[in-house]
Length: 159
Image (cartoon, rainbow, N blue to C red; front, side, top):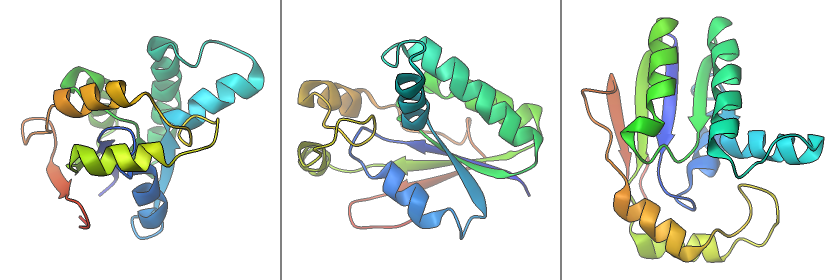
């Protein structure tokens, strides 16, 4: 069955690396909010810090991909239920099964990974450590009432 994999976790949790590592096995295309942000910067349009602008474009691209019948890995923090709703609504509109891939890692691991980033591009640069800590603390775990399946990634583990 066609599947939308929604990645959930703080910045530095390993979502993008996981998506790249599993895309072939899952026969899926990756759609990352950081790529949308980088496209906005490269094209000089919009504000890549404006979540409403970014996720309007993410949703547009997601719906376009779902309409083709491809499996999709959606790479963004999705740290609160309200930030996942657009993806779940789109998946249901197109008859997709939904899988949450929840990165439940200790804050120390995430902060160490984040601190090791040195690029300036979205997704490769270090984020403010206090912001990452707030996202980690406020992350709402995905539930069976939202998703068809929930895969939980623990430090050193795989789904």
